Structures are given as structure tokens and as C-alpha cells.
Image 1 (tube, rainbow, N blue to C red):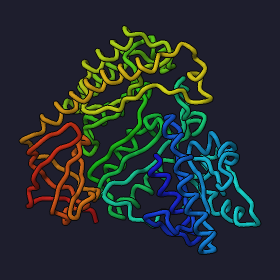
Image 2 (image 1 turned 135 degrees about the vertical axis):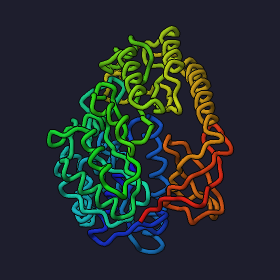
Image 3 (image 1 turned 45 degrees about the vertical axis):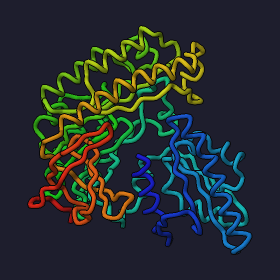
Image 4 (image 1 turned 135 degrees about the horizontal axis):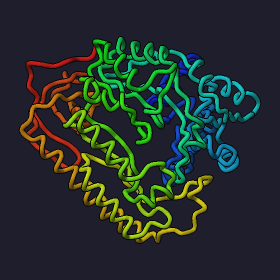
Length: 434
């Protein structure tokens, strides 16, 4: 979501003459787009601002040039006034629903040492105001269809920083998908905090998927992030009857313990989640899953943690994200005092990740010897190196073949590691972005 928002901020600033640069050194404006999901991500902002401030001071002192610093995104939304007080060199603070106002805020900040802040919750106004992108999206593009969350999990700050669930209009999304396809995208990932809660114009996420699948240029469709409570029948069926919908689904559960799930206010239990997994596998037997897990939630016992390990064994994930619980200010979880000791969180996370990493490696090893279509959508660090992904979101590295950038090409998988695959391209067949 932040990648999508960052591209849109660049589009907004392009309307007033700004263009992207690869480095903040010598930049006229720096926008630090932020995330508030985890404590460490929030803490990083001030150290990053300190580095940017040094460049701002250098430009002003030595070159007599002004650098405008803006903080955007969810931390800006949640802690805007604190940022203004703690970092007086920041010129603009803009929330995740107000970044369409950046040109106006910049004009305000340019006037006689003013500083500007905008923390409005106006998602419809934002999307109505955003210009069409002038950037090439590349072979793989993001498309936000839904924002906000009404679930109010006790650990999560999203409802307070992104607001209530809002779905964009169906026609608006399809128009944007067509523009992305015409600009060269062969893969579209539909985004939302609860993307499968989409309900624009009475349509569902499955309706969106089927309509986008009709675009001949689009070869791959993905969506994230989903909530188990919003996995409707037509979406489950789409995994079985829409060939362009990729066989990989990120479906977070957070814990395998019913008691912890209740304390998290997840509004489902483990059996409900496992039933969804079963129905999805009936629709598409080769479907691979990833999830999110939090260990050390307040009050989590050893027995409840063991239930998480058991659920992981039942599902057998292809990859996962796992974290130690960290309280987010303003959430109900932050005032729960039955906390798990830090050393216990570290130990449990290590045990969980040992199991998850073993499953990921085993999943990747099953690919060895197969011919898999890989979309090479990113350039590597080295000359001629490309990075791509399989239909199952496995990373594939390729060297000395830059001509395959932006293409889907068949690859014989020759090796597997925990975090990716290696292979050799079959040269005689590929689908290339326009």
C-alpha cells in the first residue's frame, strides 16, 4: 500500500513541476512515507529524519537552497502533532488520506516560515483528486481498490490511521486497470487493508478479478491483504475458475489459539480459518498460502503458543511473516497488562520461525526440476541481474539476461533455497510487457 501511495504522491507532485530523483542528496523536496504497523518502523522515522536534516542544513548553509521535508503516511496520521514538535525542521505533515493536498501544503509551507499539517479522513476526495499516473508502472503494478478497516483487532492501529472501510467505484478501478495494462503492466495486484471487503457499486472483489481478467494484456492477478471473515463464496470460487488469478494467497490469522484470537478481537476461531483453507484448496488444489503471526500477545500461555505451532503444521505454509508483539499506542492491546516477558517472546518467535522456514524451504524444493513461468519485474544489484517471481510468489534470480526484463518467461528450476529459486530460461517462449 505504501508503494502505491508513494507513486501517487509522485504523480501529484508532477502536476506542479516536480520529478523523482534516486537520492535525497540535493533534492528540492523529500517525502518520507511512513508505516505505523510495528514499533520499530515508527522509531526509524526520527533517525531517518536526522540524516535528511543534515542535507537540508548543508543546502541552506552552503548553497543557499531550500529543501522541503514532508512526513506522510500512517505515522504522520497518528503522530502528526508530535512530529511537528519533535522535529521542528519538518515542513509538512500529511496523513494517508490527505496526500492529494501536497501541492497546496507546499505552497503554504513556502510562505514566510509557515509549516503545514493535514490529517483529514477523506478517502473519496483523495481518489477523486488524484491525477492519472504519467509513470510507467512496469510489468507488475499495484492498484488500490479498498482502504481502511472496520475490524478493530486489539493489536492493530490501522482503523485509527486509515479510517473506516472505503471501497472505490468499480468503474474507476477498471479504468485504472486498463491504463496500467496499456502502459505495460502484465500483472496487477489489487490492494486494500481488507481487500476482500471490497463492495464498490454493489460489486465484489471476485467481480473485479473477473473483469480485469478480461483485459488481454493482463496475465496475472493477485490481491492482498485479506481477512478470513471476508472470504466470500464467489471469491473462493474465483480461485478455481479464473486462470489469471495466481495460486498464492496471503490470509493472515495471527494465532492458532482460540483464546488469543478472541483477545485479539479477530472475530473468528481457528476452525473457521481452517475451513476456509480447506474450501480454497478444494477450489484450487495447488493453492499456496502465506500468513501473519504475532507471538507473545498479552496473556499468551505456552499451551496457546503450541496451538499456533499446530495450526502451522496443519496448513503447511509456503511462506509467512512472523513478529513479536509490540503495543501500538491508542490500541486496546496497549493497555493490556498481562504481558509476556521479552525473553519468552524471543524464544517463541525463534521456535515458530524454525518451523515456518522449514516449510518454506520444503515448498521451494518441490519446484526443482519443474518448468515454471517467471515474471522478471525487478533489476538486481549487479549488471545484467534480474529478479522475478513465480506464480507462487517465489523469488527467482537470473544473471546475464537483461533482455527478459518485463517478460514472463519459462524457467527450468535447478535449485532451491529458503528464500528463493535458481534456474535457467527456456529461450523460445515468453510474454513481454508492452
